[in-house]
Image (cartoon, rainbow, N blue to C red; front, side):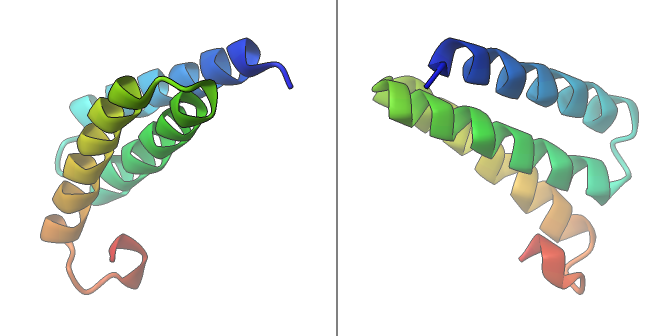
Length: 79
């Protein structure tokens, strides 16, 4: 498996999602997409053995998911 390439792709996706979430903070969909992208980054870090980095990005993903849920708690996709 090419973990370096997987990490790079996941981090690029997270950067794009982070930009959209920043540009459109009122759109919970972008916060949810950011949470998903950061989750991928965290999974890659876990597989690579970088547990502290995975924990850090996991906390950021959790915060983004919470923002999406708080903005639209009735949407089941954000639960």
